[in-house]
Image 1 (cartoon, rainbow, N blue to C red):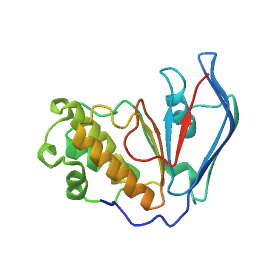
Image 2 (spheres, rainbow, N blue to C red):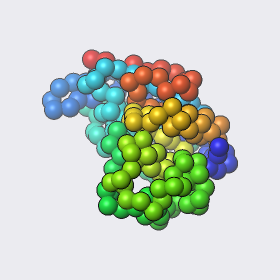
Image 3 (cartoon, one colour):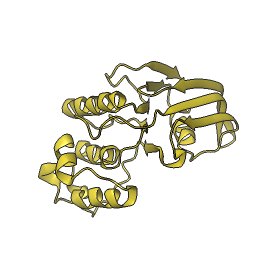
Image 4 (tube, helix red, strand yellow):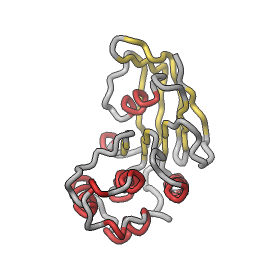
Length: 205
């Protein structure tokens, strides 16, 4: 299951002495790690420990209190990553097919509608609006952005939320394929996804 061949670039992610805060409260300090091409970093921690904030900082959506976040080995760091939050960010009245075409146009996607829908088992609901989808189908659709427009670095916040066993198996196949292509995955989880991580990162105050 592969959306594309190996990435031409060899991405890497470097974090040094990172400190984050939210609402004036320090979440964590002095966090450092590095992820090379093909890495899967599983981020664990209790609720409120800063897992989501870490992903948002890596995505450039949250300014750190201090520290360094560096994306290297790619030509355009600003467009080198996908951030999929715990919310699906879908329009309830828009059809599944409309979402796929919108993302392809916005993000410069190449994979065909048939290819994406087959990979995520969305073929039967392409003509349906999001409001009638099950939670698992909606989550699969949100994850379709990873396939529609390939990016070397994936930042995933609770990516298995609402997925059944079949959906989790598909997710793990996507992660394995992405790593084999030289991509990097950083995922915040409540419990292990099943895909073996290259490193486990625990955030705590």
